[in-house]
Amino acid sequence: MFRRTFWFTAGAAAGVWATTKVNRKLKQLTPESLAAQAADKAIETGHRLKDFALDVRAGMLQREAELGSALGLDAPADQDPGRELPAPRRRAALGPLADPGTTTPYSFSYNRNEDH
Image (tube, rainbow, N blue to C red; front, side, top):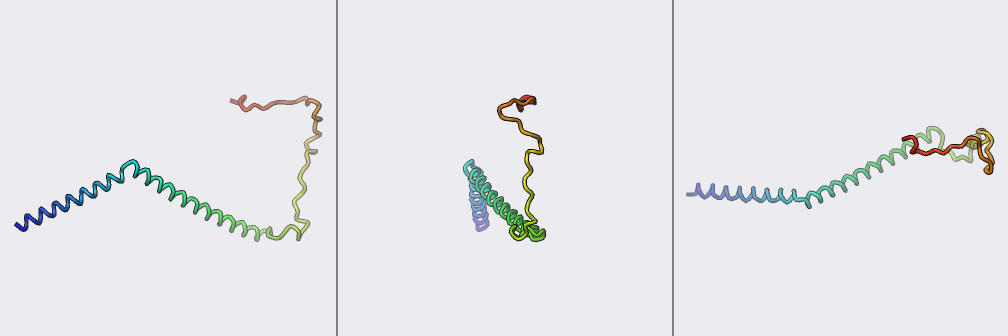
């Protein structure tokens, strides 16, 4: 008699446990739950990407500082006047510009659609 009661109770407990587990899994697979899980994963991924970008930025600034000190670029420009950048090149090297009132012998209009 006790043996039958034990197995009956064990079967009922197993049935309740299995039913509870299945119901929880079904609730996790509803469209609303799946959408919420996807949104949570997307937010988590966004935070990880932001942290990665900040780490890359910090590493880049550190490396730029190392290269600047190695190349002597940390010194202010006022200290050494011989280290200034050259003046920008003028358009005179390309030839004289035409007057705006005259037409040039060669003129063309570039239409990107003509190439296709």
